[in-house]
Amino acid sequence: MKILIVDDEKLLVKGMKFNFEQDGYTVETAYDGEEALKLAHDKNLDIIILDLMLPKIDGLSVCQKIREFSSIPIIMVTAKTEDMDKIMGLEYGADDYITKPFNILELKARVKAIMRRITPVAKEGDRSKIRMGTVELDYNQRTVTIEGSTVDLTSKEFDLMDLLVCNPGKVYSRENLLDLIWGYDYPGDARTVDVHVRRLREKIEPNSAEPVYLLTKWGAGYYFKDIT
Image (cartoon, rainbow, N blue to C red; front, side, top):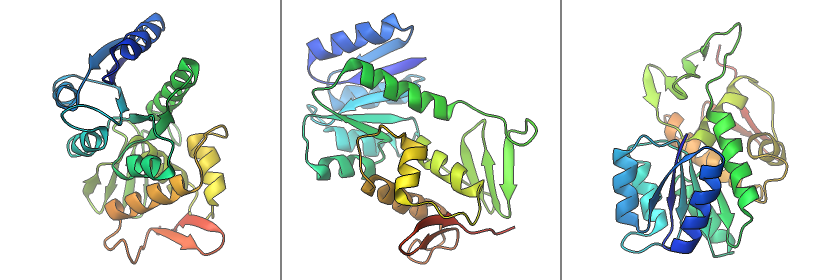
């Protein structure tokens, strides 16, 4: 498994690289946004740990540019604690975030949690795909196809889509979704769910302002409409 660590603090990068290599990961490193983008283009990576404050190109812009060509999981690292920075990271396509200073064990746990979720799984008698109406989920490619068009989702967006599609009509509160998709110990709040639902609607709905697939039950939560 190959990780790209992007941060301009060289001692921090060195320590993170050592710790992940001790666990058997292959680690690529970058110290500015331009270098990070080049490696994201050229290397076959499994996950990126991306600092928010970077020379040349900032982390949010790097994240946004990567999302133009890849759905690789991204964990955003920030020294800032304001909620807006965390929300902006999610808006730009990050799957998770962690705030400095952090415990390396917590970061490792988050990496493992994301990689577990994106490992291809079998569904319904070892089939790698499921279909509901015009919506098809491919678990090997971790892609969603709607009316024949493939939608490129981030890992968290795919997890969210998977849960809702496989339980049509079931209403999940934001707190339920936060626990099921991000984990009960995730330090974020329910607005994380709102950001991902909004992004998901922008990708899968003909008109995100008038959704037909991913619906809201006011005062209760979100659900996927049974379209079979």
